[in-house]
Amino acid sequence: MAKKQVTFADIAEYTGFSKTTISRYFNHPDSLTLENQEKIAKALDELGYRKNKLARVLANGKSEFVGIIVPNLYLHYYSEMLTQLLRSYSDYHYKFLVFVSDGGPEKEMQYLDELMAYKIEGLIVLSHTLSSEKLASYNIPVIAIEREAEHICSVTTDNYMGGMQATSLLIRNQCDVLIHINVHVPENIPAYDRIRAFEETCREYHVPYELNLNVSGDSYQELFEQMRVIFQDIDSKYSGQKKGIFLSNDTYANIFLNLIFQKYNCLPDEYQIIGFDNSPIAAESIIPITTVGQQIDVIAQTTMELLVEQMNEMKKRKPAPLQKPIHKKITPVLIRRQTTGD
Figure 1: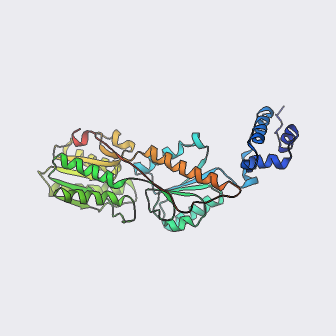
Figure 2: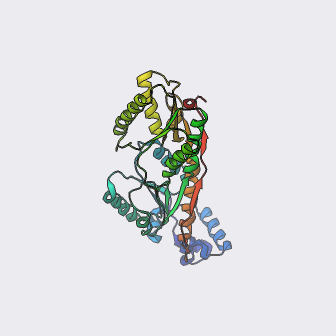
Figure 3: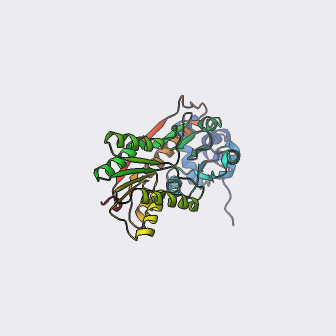
């Protein structure tokens, strides 16, 4: 025989509280004394109560859903960050609705409308498509990771320190010329500091350098072909010189390393390569790649802590929203591997 579903009426009768009090326990527990909360919790255990989460969503509009928007998953940083965020379920028990933002502003607006229809309680954004001002207008807790965040909270790496760590290592390793490979990054994006640190460090130590900001492409295949052109230009232009190549992420670094192997069947002494992120591909590549570790797990954990704190505040009868956005910066760690002779 099927076990009878325990109702609010059953709990009220068992505890002697009213159904209104039982409802307040589930929807606004802070409105009850700690003693009464403990009495009801004990009764739920004794009655074998099983949560009807759908009914709870319908009753209080709290879905326990968090939205995530990532630009793509072919850059290994985003896939690893997504993995770390999803692992937080065991700590916080929030479910995630994930969209890949690869269709421009109108498409991303559709994704946000879809997320809002599911009554998400919070949003994590890694894409750069919509402004932080627009995201703030949705009036839910929003955390940005490595993107413009003037009007919303954010968690980023100390990109300047990371860029300086990479550049300084290549200088210490006595490279003849240093080259930074990246996309055109707007100055209001945190990752721009990787470019700024590279340039300023090279100038401080009077080291010849080149910025190549010509990376483009909306797929791994397009990136590979663009990187092939960049590699051929560098290999020809600086033939015979010891080249220190600092790439803006590990996916680019792995592609560049593969192109070197396609031509030389090894990593010649005249090449030193450093990536950024410490995503799994850096350790798994044909030769483990030296990289600036973003501590992705720490960024994900910090993001969830900040988001959950705000979502919990919004559940109170009289929530006190943040007066101004909180911005947290995580220290990077240089991880030396074989592409810099370590």
